Image (cartoon, rainbow, N blue to C red; front, side):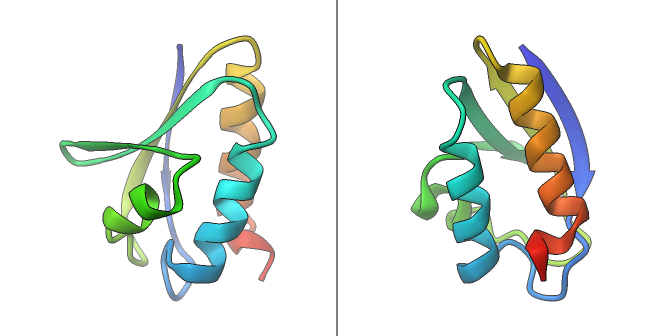
Length: 87
């Protein structure tokens, strides 16, 4: 299992378009991947799950992956968040 915390800093948080990019990236990996905010954990490959967390600008989330490519998965998602989802 590999985990890393990251703060979402883009203007709209992890909603609609950025969430779609996030899920598409998560689905490139074989590992199970989760997003955790406070006490809630959802599947990072589920649009409804990610949107249900209500992640806004300034929110710190934890990315968790477990599987063959867990480290690569978390690092790729962290880079995507740092790059403001390519915006």
